[in-house]
Length: 127
Image (cartoon, rainbow, N blue to C red; front, side):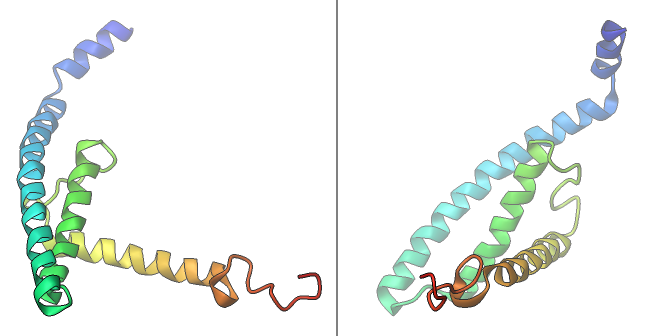
């Protein structure tokens, strides 16, 4: 039974196509990480010269980090959706930002007063 399943998996065009895409996105990830290194240097230079990082480059870096996340999720089988250019760039950025906004709101609600888990207990009688 298992031997037959292995043969079926090895002959699956879908699996081989995904592996081909994975090789492609591994190369893309390598190139994107070189771009990230350039962004780091440019932002550091901006911060040294102007006292703050460039906002536009920072926005691009946020989008790029979302793209890196999507590539890694695809490569590790955490997500079956292929990253850009096979899906739109905006969908990836919007999805990540919407999830982040929800997570941030939930975290703030859980933190309570004074940013402490469970609220601010400094004014309670037993503290």
